[in-house]
Image (cartoon, rainbow, N blue to C red; front, side):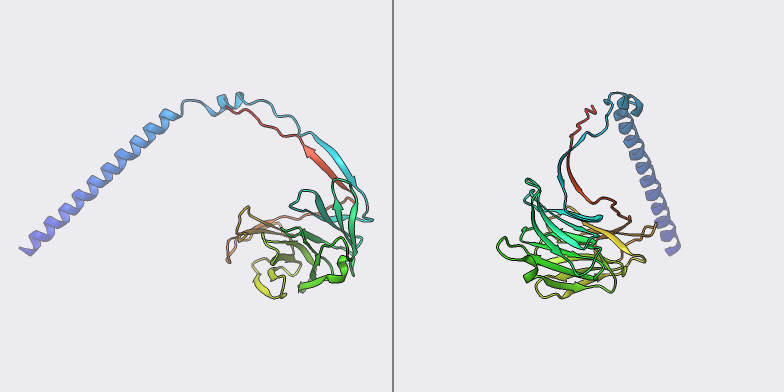
Length: 259
């Protein structure tokens, strides 16, 4: 009796699986049929409708002169008027992009100031380079900005890049010691270290987000490295500059009519 029940249950399961398989096949066929209905124009036909795109028309607006060697890094202030630049000549300069005037010029204790960044508020700038340090400068028209400078953190090799993650309270740095580091600006405490790279970190950038908790970093190796800590995508990318002057350009916007 028990054997008959087992055979009946097995047969029912087989029938159920076959029924589900047929239903899945029918749904797949229906989806393919609906997809084909939408596929009424070949890609080549659509591409023929697109207007030919000419080269981007870039016209220089300002030329900011002042550095005596290669400009290694730039950053806009969120006021869309001021720029901070750092150079191989060992200087960091705060520019008024409208007038081309230099508002501050800071001489660093070492050459090759490889990184600089504006804080979101526009009241701070940070920079670093071959001194292995990330140093923050409060900006003030009345006072010498060097008088209130503060060393926030120190790497074991040169500091190559830095960025404020949507807050004046923290700063993210990349270094030749193969690490990225998140620092507390006020206390100088190391909040988190990212150590998944195997080469010199040359570039970092934040994803467009209000929280600022996702960033990319690039190394001088021609390889991709998958992250294992926090949302982090690592790209192999080496940045370099061979210019001593800064040009402000306004690329012409191109809006192709696709359909």
